[in-house]
Length: 475
Ligand SMILES: Cc1ncc(COP(=O)(O)O)c(C=O)c1O
Image (cartoon, rainbow, N blue to C red; front, side):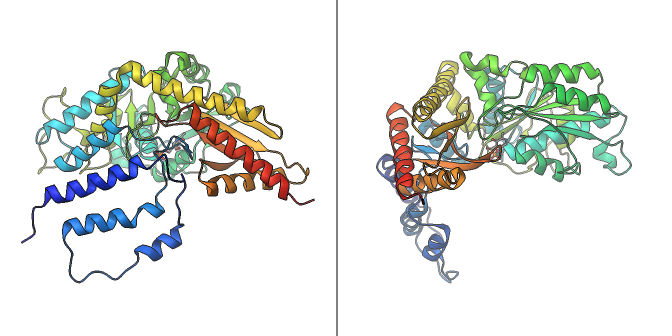
């Protein structure tokens, strides 16, 4: 008989978690070992006999740290990975302890109704239609996929085609238009939905990665039949936001029920929660669907995204499940998450969203977003003023910077050397990219902890690597 040692296990886990979190400021930001080194450290035969639960928790807590990235550090700026708020981490632990299958409201009322309120709060914070449906999914990829499934349903239903019942074979052709700088998850979603990852008509983007409204208009003018337009609020590199009002005008001008505007706002949509950034995202409320993440800018732990649809019916038709062995969804006001997410069994990942918003309040969310933008401004200003550094992209919480090779040979190679040295040095951790044909270093400020001292340390580390790279630069 196994021992019910909740005390021992949770105390060991809490101790190890606190040791990790308390050490974030002292340890290098990047992991000390690479994946091959980590595999060598953890590889082992399938145990024939188990060990005590507390022993295992302690073993895990000792094994992992050398290979952990300090994503919770104020100086972690890779990809767009938010830090996790203490209140959201604690709520996430409770979600595990409660272990509710948060798909159906009737048997699991606590977590599903907390999620329902969290979804309503998100609609209010982002000022999206209050009647929209919200599905808490694993992240931006899943959110884009769910929203585009609803879009596919909506635009085909306008042509009298039931895609859930009859599939795509023989259906009217669905045209997809996406910006040249869309996130790759849009292509993956289109692929999964049978719309073809590479068949989207590409609307040109400007120097900040924003879809050109005139390019969209020109494409729409040539298309007959159902159309899905994929816009973006927050380019993964420089943070650029599509001119959403103008794109919505172009979609409205088509004047047909079979044109759907989707906004991928994985992180950028949160700009709407900060009064000073709102104007940049004006018009987002006019879209038909929105994908966003809480695990990025709301600083909940992984994994937590949201698929939001103005047409709740299309959302439900695309995702809903009914089976004889499942409870019937009764009261329409008590929504079943199973109807708006692709999972049947699911974690209550919206509960940490409730906790984060309950803790921060409207003002705190605005302050979090605003402060990240201000810290990104500080990075851009300090790096932009340094000799040999050039800011290539800057919007919301994102900065893309490039360093010129003092020997005048190869700026791309020099920039990559600077990045590698900064990452190895451990003082801060940006990630790399190619932005409009040039190698760049992306700095994403997406953590409630990042303050001016963190930025100044990050800037110093990058400039030191630039100067050191200059010193060893060939020629
Ligand atoms: C604009 C955009 N869309 C989608 C995604 C994918 O989100 P996720 O990693 O949560 O699936 C990202 C990730 O950075 C993103 O920036």
